Length: 314
Ligand SMILES: [Zn+2]
Ligand SMILES: [Zn+2]
Image (cartoon, rainbow, N blue to C red; front, top):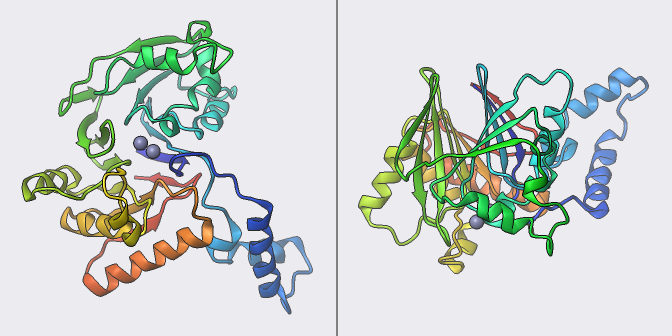
């Protein structure tokens, strides 16, 4: 199974500003002082060895995840990262013309990439849609109503098939089982588990974990159990989370607790807040690492920051 993150932001696309770039550039130039950078190879090595905060951006696109398994292609969510994913699917070497799309929920940041998804305009492609939310065709039509977008869904010439997918049911795709869990979020969101004979990948964004009974908490632990990778909504700091009850998002610290109780191998912090620049996101990440070290010193959980373009080869 190969998973690629095409968008890791929440709420609204957040392209880096020139001021963000300049801040990184100044730090890099300070580190370059006195180094031998006289050849392109030496420059490559220097750049490669910089800490990730300095030689890349966390990324500005919203929720879009691609999963490849053998001859199957799955996409979770239609956020702004979908545009770039669509561009790669239009290349001559693409071999995926049947695409299975799972929608966590229909808030803008998980939907507004669809009008910019080139395969949707191409009759060679068949798009299968799944979500316990249902009524997806109407919602896509609404998003592309002429008052909001100039091109109707009817003009998009791909074949579109909308499948029934009930809460807590499981679908099978030649060796991939896909199950779902309802998440606590305004209007409900759904998490998805992709399970093969070898691996478990779980996407569980847009979820709050406050005010739950132990029964409900246990339900999450059961669903996340033994995941190789868990993509987790870590939009807020713990303090923000306490102030934003019922906003429908969570923090890295809650993610660490749940992931360790569920025996997750890699926890990827996701759905970064648009008001946090890279430095702020890395600070939340550092705090989460510290929390894990202090509270679970023996844990083998690999805690990482979800970044745009990140690939998991499972
Ligand atoms: Zn969202
Ligand atoms: Zn949402």
